[in-house]
Image (cartoon, rainbow, N blue to C red; front, side, top):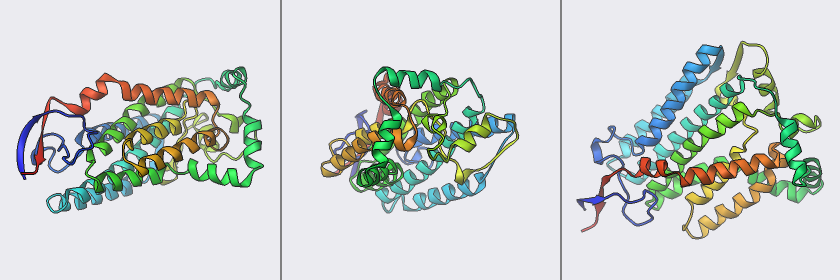
Length: 317
């Protein structure tokens, strides 16, 4: 293997060579995805400062930090022996850090308690001919369909694990970095919109529907102090649907990967009709979520952020 200097290429390149972000072994000690870690660290710092300022108490930060630190230590130990295993473990740590800090951010945004917009959102759905209650009852009345949609709707965590394993095993570490950067960047407008356009969603309108997140959401719109367990948090975003955002991003991340990519695309296509009845979303939530995903990928700023001007690559003799 010889080190050669080249012009920057998209990190999503599927060739055998894999870019080493930031210029080799000196890049932030051992981190393979420093840009993603910077984004997640910013989320965590904002979470800690914001929660302290408004009186939100969240237990479990120490345990989460310990687990992430342990995974990073194992990743560092494998860096010289197997870069693929090292990147797989680091990616797992990144997903844990991102989902934890991102969930906390959605809770903090909910404390702003702006006027609920359910009437407006429900009116938009009716205007385009979508009846949430009819679709939910249709799904519940068909056990096989309900089971299939439930499996698809709950597949985001397995897809995170699959991305870490598959991209490391197939020498596509850049895909993991790209996916995580896109997930972090699209979370920002998603949280901002949910902050200024809050909603309880159809689960809040039709009281017969189960919604485990509603007690937390209603509590955050009430009187402080607030106390939660990090491991028990659920995403509180109703408008827009971040499930749609991630479904689009995972499908894009697995592009041109053969049967695995087609399987992921099919799973996420099945997830979409599950989002309103099982996730308690209006149809307009999905439209806006899809737009955020597409605009996030198209962002020129994102391209500049992840590519840089040049990098070192390892190429075979």
